[in-house]
Image 1 (cartoon, protein in one colour):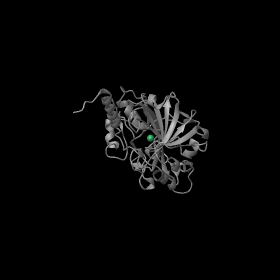
Image 2 (cartoon, rainbow, N blue to C red; image 1 turned 180 degrees about the vertical axis):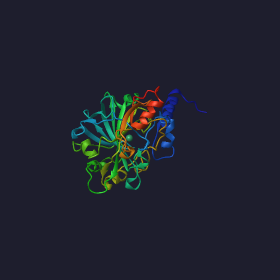
Image 3 (cartoon, rainbow, N blue to C red; image 1 turned 90 degrees about the horizontal axis):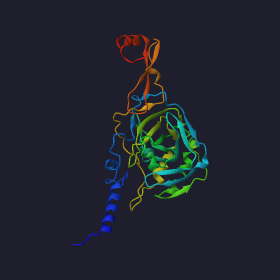
Image 4 (cartoon, rainbow, N blue to C red; image 1 turned 90 degrees about the vertical axis):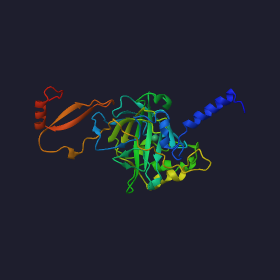
Length: 334
Ligand SMILES: [Zn+2]
């Protein structure tokens, strides 16, 4: 019987913890269904969500964003295959403020999630059950912290999420095809190519309306799934040709196995919304405001645990008068 010495034990311990920490999308032993044992992935503030558009809460504080550096092509440094996605690293000088955020957040990188080209969708979030072909995440951190520091703060990370869809005609305006043309140069994990000031973030986003968005508090969508993210999910997708969407699984491969496997379906399944509310920057649809009776706007404090508090409802003045009569002890402002 052999004797296991101390260095050997330490080595085995490190090896064991490394094995436990491993995660993936494409193998039974480490696919998303197994992630609940990792970090915060089993928590109750997880992402992504299916955003039920009929259940969102209008929030008038969700105004326009101010984008800094989004038009500057020199700030996109390189594109790299991380083995589970492709990531574009950003230089200092890209940031966002406004948009209902309490402070400025600095962008550090963006990456993508996808399915299997145009044949199988792969966005992480969904809109009223609809899954889009792809989703882009621009990751920003508070106070210029790195990701490992910012993830300790419950609002330390602000991610802007953009759906990507096939343009039904040739009226697409995104420059994503320039980026997708480089994918064959980063086909396997670890490969990286410089971008040489060819693309700005604005040129990738194209004509997407950046004032129509949903907001909720969630998590990173990869282990350790830290519950540190203020999510902004834009309603309207970036529109690109089908060939751009097909290029991602065609040109890229996962890491970690002897045989190269097509990098596809790198999205986390939907998580439970629980007691969370999703807020909307958009007004209710016109059909929600009915009758010719004069309407009065009433603000009601919505006591949720989130930092987003007020919503507005429209009530006919006659109904309001009855409400005021019945609830004179209540805190409604009549
Ligand atoms: Zn992501």
